[in-house]
Image 1 (cartoon, rainbow, N blue to C red):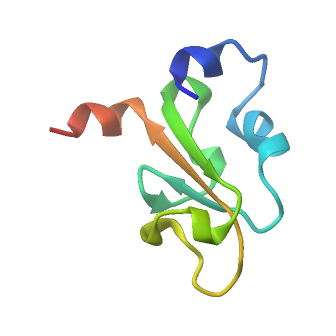
Image 2 (cartoon, rainbow, N blue to C red):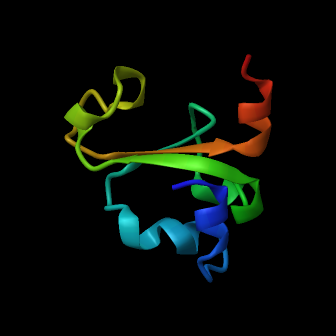
Length: 83
């Protein structure tokens, strides 16, 4: 899902937007760093990746101890810095 699709939802904030998609042990990454969702606003989000199981996520986004999913959020500023 990319920024225009995210904008079409009527969520109040990022936590509200992602709540239905994530479970209790989902690991959250913002711009590849583990951070809480409250650190990002919906307008900052350019895209996201959702992995429901540890084995589906790339190694850098896996929890080595639990079979938790991962939510990887990319902001507009991080994508503009990539070559």
